[in-house]
Image (tube, rainbow, N blue to C red):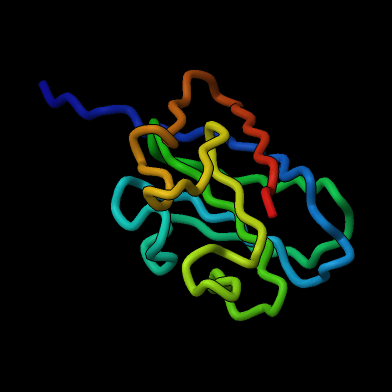
Length: 131
């Protein structure tokens, strides 16, 4: 008898709030496994970009993993990167992370504190951008 594991698939709706529409640009939502989170955007499992149109925007993904971490970037200049402020250390662009994680003096949030687990066929997350 052959046993196979069932394919895991769930819809994830991400509501991004606190968007400063006066800054223009794009909102970029990145879905990560542990590898690359949160700095290496090329390792994101899924990415979606939408032009800033309102202070709240919704993104929908089909996820095939039981847990992920989410990063949201308000990419004002459209280069797909986090622009630093005058210090060269802290971000100028707005950022948001799953589980309300924030950038601290010790650096960006880690995957273990940011990951969310899925338990139902449909899941939701709300991420507020911090400027």
